[in-house]
Image: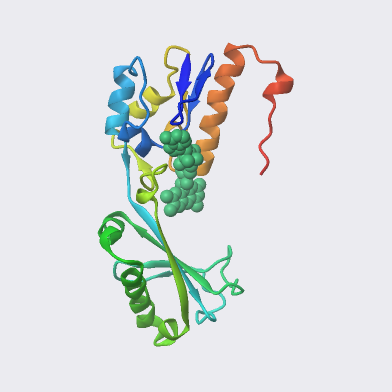
Length: 220
Ligand SMILES: Cc1cc2nc3c(=O)[nH]c(=O)nc-3n(C[C@H](O)[C@H](O)[C@H](O)COP(=O)(O)OP(=O)(O)OC[C@H]3O[C@@H](n4cnc5c(N)ncnc54)[C@H](O)[C@@H]3O)c2cc1C
C-alpha cells in the first residue's frame, strides 16, 4: 500500500497504524482509497468530540491558600487549580482554568483580554482585589483551533460499543486505527497508549517481527 503526505512524499508499506484523533478523521482531511468499510465510516460519523480549553493565569505572587488544590466557582470560568499534585506549589504563581463544553464554544469569538477579565472577575468574588492587582499575563489554549486536534475530549453516544468495535477491527489486514477512541478507557492517555500497543502487536504477529525489534519500551 502507499501513503501520501501533504508534501507529496510517498511511503510504500505493508500496513499502517492511523493514530490521528477522531475530530481530524471527521474532517475528511485524510482520504482512504478505496474508502473504509461502512462500519468504520458510520463509526467516524457518529463519534463525537467535545470542546475544551484552558486558560493559564500568571500572577506576580500567589494570593490563594497554600493547600488549595482546586477551586470551583459559578460562571463561565468556574474551575481552577493550582500547580502541583497537592497544590501548594507557588513558585510560578500560576492558576489554570479548564473551560469546557458550551462555555468553550462561546469563548471562540472572545479575545484573550475578554476571557481573562471574566476569569479575574470570578476569582475576585473569592479573593477580592488581589487577582486583578497581581495579574501579570495570560495564555489561552483552545484545542478546537488546533488543526491537528480540532477538539477536546472524545465521546461516543452508543451504549453497545459499536464505534470502538468498528475502529479496532483491522481494515483488510492493512490499516489499523489507534487512539483513545479505540480503548474502553477512552478519553485518557493510557487508553491511547494501550490501543497503540494492541495495533503494533497485530502487525508484530502478522508479519512475524523478531522480538528484539518488537520489544520497544517507551521512555516515560
Ligand atoms: C484539556 C484536556 C485535558 C486532558 N487531560 C487528561 C489527563 O489529565 N489525563 C489523561 O489521561 N487524559 C487527558 N486528556 C485526554 C488525552 O489528552 C487524550 O485522551 C489523548 O491525548 C488521546 O491520545 P491520542 O493518541 O488518541 O490522540 P492525540 O494525543 O490527539 O494524538 C494524535 C496525534 O496525531 C497527530 N495528527 C493529527 N492530525 C494529523 C494529520 N493530519 N497528519 C499527521 N498527524 C496528525 C497530532 O499532531 C497528534 O500528535 C485530556 C484532554 C484534554 C483536551
